Amino acid sequence: MNPHDADRALVQRAQQGDSRAFEMLVVKYQRRIERLISRMVRDADLVHDIAQEAFIRAYRALPQFRGESAFYTWLYRIAVNTAKKALVELKRDPVSTESARARSGEDDETYRPDHELSDGETPEALLASKEIAATVNAAIDALSEDLRQAITLREIEGLSYEEIADVMNCPIGTVRSRIFRAREAIASRLRPLLGTREGERW
Amino acid sequence: MSDDSPHPPHEPNAEPWAALSSLADGEAAPEVQERCLVLWAEHAEARERWRHYHLIGDVLRSRELASDEAHDAAFLSALRSRLAREPALLRPARAALVRRLRAWTAPVAAAAGVAAVAGVVVMLRATPTTDEAALVAARPSVQPVMVSAPAGAQAIQPVNGRLIRDARLDRYFAAHRQSATGAALQMPGGMVRSVDTIVLEDR
Image 1: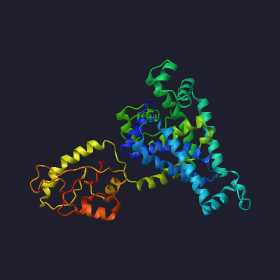
Image 2: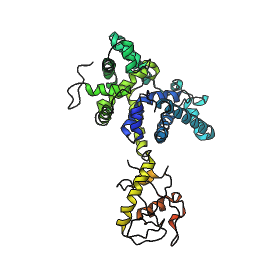
Image 3: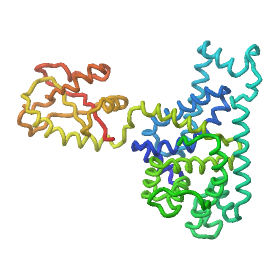
Image 4: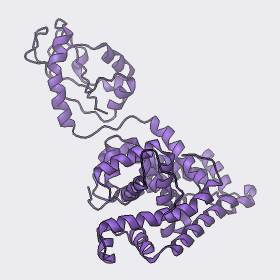
């Protein structure tokens, strides 16, 4: 497997049947996969269904994944193919196409104002996600320079700990610690924001 | 770092979350990975942190990716239900398994203590589990395997291709007729040249 794939350990364990590892990968990539699919499909329920299907297909195909590409690249391709297949099916089946079109607002007679948010988000959900984004960015700005640099190099530039240690001229253990502390600082700001919405679901 | 975050039992400091953080970056040693998987399974706080760490990364790269907890939790919950209905993954290294199965053939055949009945088939198991789910799991991508009767078995004539009928196998084949390819199942008195054996994987 590609030695630089950050998912390598979890993927190998998932391939050995560890469902916890697979679930951790799902949580990691679910948002990105849903966003990818929502660029191809407008109906929010359909996006959810296709995303579910994509992860199931990935699960079934895990034994064949050899790590020639990064896991996410492979997952991404599966998601695109799953969405394409779904779109073809929709075109073929007039009944489901009809309801999908109605939901997405293409049929003028059934167009409703709340479908202006074409990905199906309610205003509340949209506001919530804006708030989350704003909180994360404010929290990043509030970090010390070292913590901000470490987490930025990791999450935006995609550098390994070793590479970050080089750039920041510090031991790898310090990199690990800075990234962790940066995450904790940001997460502590997110927690009250997210905690007020729902009871514990995890 | 937040001073008021509670720690899971047996952990005096925040070290387990640091382990999760390093696993998120693919920088955790194997024993740390294992600990993280246990944390994931046993502590809601671990699952929340894993989600938060990745949400933070997603949002840093694109504000669009911020999404609410309820939505994400519902997604995972629905997927779990579907995953529970999936057959277990078959692991690679089929060759090693086949070697092990051949070693099993002798004791199984001898212990059966059945006089040779021509034209029957042995179903060998790699694990002692007996649930139907394991049988179904074997079906999707199983390859037929050549298994010959053990030379040393005493209760059975060591004729090439003669094997023992397994009642579970009969039920299985009755339920999954399309899997019962090959001539092995019904050739009374005949020499069986090859046999399809269902290979069950370890979990």
